[in-house]
Length: 273
Image 1 (tube, one colour):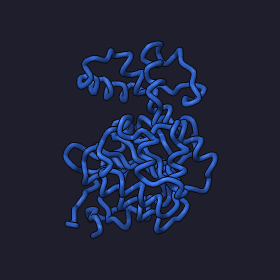
Image 2 (cartoon, rainbow, N blue to C red):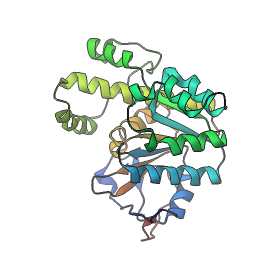
Image 3 (spheres, rainbow, N blue to C red):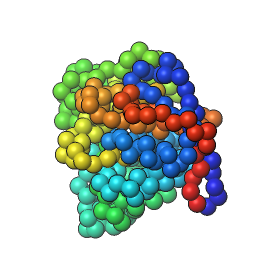
Image 4 (cartoon, rainbow, N blue to C red):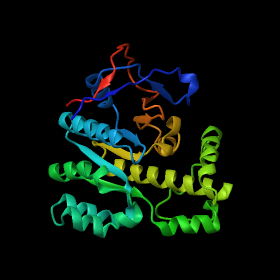
């Protein structure tokens, strides 16, 4: 595989939420060593970008090689189908049957080639895969009744609403969804962020000694908002790191404010061959 360079750029904290700090450019090895200090590691993506998926895989494997207690959490699967992911990892069903029973093609729809290396690596090593997404039925109910009127096992008892800066970002995204009203669009995004954060919280409670690698669209991670913001409200002590890919193909890593040290290396990240 050709060698690809990914730069991590340093930004002043005032540009982002005060909950986060940032790396300067660092080597891949230094990045992995720092990520080992965090319990939840979000590897954000542009869903159809193959290079990002290669980077996700490299980071996932590198962390697992150094710390065996890891869990792979994926936005690509809906929570009601969790047992089929368990059966896949445990060897009771193969990949084809897992995808059929999780209704992957209908509920996610993107080519399995984008993700199969991730879930097959997890299956090979017996790494638990956690389904993060919510069923369409919940989204339809939220769209119809409003999130303030919906109670669900997939949502935390108290909804965490997006702060103003994240709301502004979401409303810019609304332009791509002309059929949605402003409130409906914000309600759906809030549902996704709360449900996925709540599932992560329950995963951390059940597996306190594990690191959770989260494969998720970058829109749920903007400037540390979205899912990380909600999880921080639900579990204030959690240590989180975020990979956020930009349109210019730069990759920014955000680290929760309690991270221990800063790097001054000017090396870029290079994917290992």
